[in-house]
Length: 116
Image 1 (cartoon, rainbow, N blue to C red):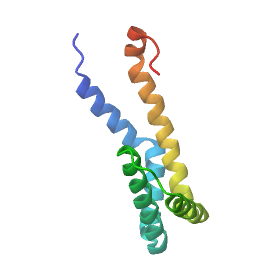
Image 2 (image 1 turned 90 degrees about the vertical axis):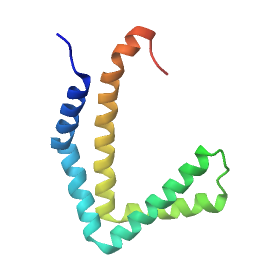
Image 3 (image 1 turned 120 degrees about the vertical axis):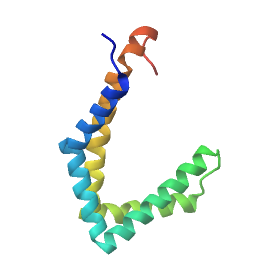
Image 4 (image 1 turned 90 degrees about the horizontal axis):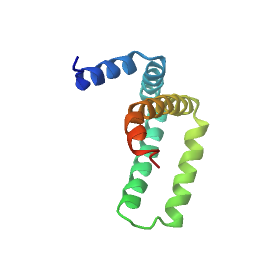
């Protein structure tokens, strides 16, 4: 019996969308977006995060000033309870997806050995 992997992937997507982890993240995200102050703070945090990631991917150095700015933004973000809940929910979903990825990669790991 042939298995259509794409059908299985779409079923997995559906299951993720119905999971408690995703729904908690979605609710937390909606709460942040409903609060103009939290929304602006979170958008600022994400922009800084993306800029630093782009610099790293391009092999550019990150200045001490950029590091300090990022640390200050993280401190502000962590003080906002709505954003803190969002980040916690995001972490839980990320952990679940990481575990799913380990399961999905198991056939390759069994074939080639542990992937580092």
